[in-house]
Length: 181
Image (cartoon, rainbow, N blue to C red; front, side, top):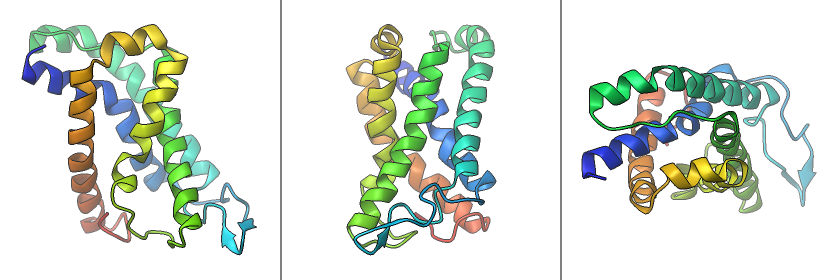
């Protein structure tokens, strides 16, 4: 794959994992997943991880994957290289893995004494990638092996923190987030 093709495929293939956390912020609120429970005097997850936000994030990722699949042929023709269509299991692995990664990161933050919204460099930017990729590989192995080449994975590891910081800064400036990370 050429460099621009690799970047294009990496961005396209990760969109169903990139969107869920943003959708969760917009649709969040409601009952926390941990129900207020604590472990060693600290909340398991905190008020920021809710059932409504998690469900909305997963649904948003699934819907986006479906929409991308519907336009993939036209986009491929326009770009001059093939972008993937998403199988249902691939879409679920990416969207569900993104939300699960964010939940697990929250759990780790609470265990290390960080409060809701506290910065945790590295984890904040890649938590959803670290879970969505293996989950997608498990649920849609052949699809994963076709699209997640070493080059694509490397682009994702470099591109994701840049996109994450940029979108969080925008959300902060728009008043959608309380902190810019």
